[in-house]
Image 1 (cartoon, each protein chain N blue to C red):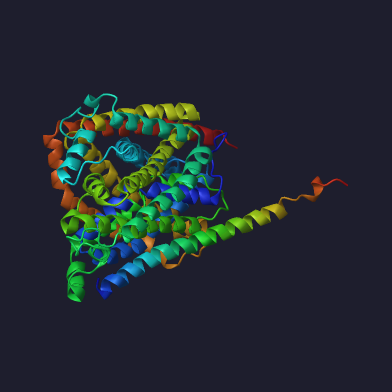
Image 2: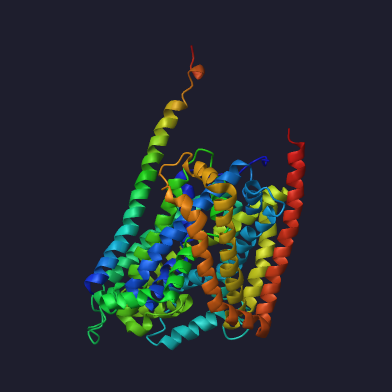
Length: 521
Length: 50
């Protein structure tokens, strides 16, 4: 089966930057450093790199291989690609996860992206000089997001937060409408180097801070780096840290979410590659790019900066707390803080938009190849669905109930399920032999033989172990939230409705594909 | 910072930066070579004037 006019990448560098752009997000600069600081600094890096080798890299390779395998058979969407790999009636329906995961994550990610844009703008015009009290920044964030009550976000009228959100909606759909090579690829080819340049400026600033507050000589650059990287308690401390199962789970989870594996995005992006294009080196480069942004840029900047100005207590926190409440306080105390505050939030905005764009493409591809819609039609349909979802997230702002519910059930739970399905599809249905043929065709990097064994046995077991442990830890509170919060129930009802809609559309697409294949000679 | 800390910092930053530089260099090298090959293979003698 082939559509009349297929989209494609303009260059090998373009697809690598696009996949890296999809993977690099707020998690690289905020979540990773926060976790490392929480789990005994440098000790965290040991399970982290082991998870990269045994989980992240093999799944990334397999996703690229399956994507191009499906693409060569005329499919760019997850349902179509799964159907081309697995000759089963059920196969395309499992692919629904490859559609709803990116689409639903987009619904709330877009809002977070607009916070970055709004904060960057505020720094540019000097509107975030709130003094040295943390409560001022917390109050500002609460008012900006509308955390106080449901609907509070809209009570601000056409203020900056709403304007930033609408700008992000318009920007995303304008870029996605321009297509793969004309939109996403161009933005990533410019955006990713710009992101790295901004991050390097901020990094140099942080590493040259010295001891900014003479009243606290213990808060200096070296101490900040030590807080992030050192092993607390020497060798016995390292052994004690490594015996913490929770740290292993957090490290594996971070690798898994950071690389955007099991998202439905990489498999879609790789499907646009040509038959003899390299995927072995391309996928490895994308992984290396993500790790550079996370470990080098994120690891050397965020926590050391927070430690230097706020001490150990200020250097720990969740993604939103660290990013939107602690760091603005750091920029307030930093020389030329307004400029570096702008650069920081602007780089977060670039990281976010290159990720959000990638979340739209899998569904666009499905609408085009499954329903026969043109670009305008598919962008309009997806725009309508995602705007409804974003509306729900942005209305139920109290304690971010709708956002948290979608993030848990789709942004974590469904990702684990999809990654497990993909790993089993590659290892046990496509098989290591056909998979290796795909990886080696045009490959510019030899893939070690042990990969076949790892993807068949080690990665699924590793993945399922982390999944079960993670579920055991977080299931109870999220199940309770469904029973107690109507915002959570409405958000999940909406997600279920979108899933049913996509399942019905897949059924229709399958009928079309079957009819076309019967007609084909 | 202790020796353990420096070791982990240098190994982590060195490994991630080094692997990105190495991979990008190979991608760019191949990009340039492909461009040259294209130039040669795209020349079709049937297109030239007699």
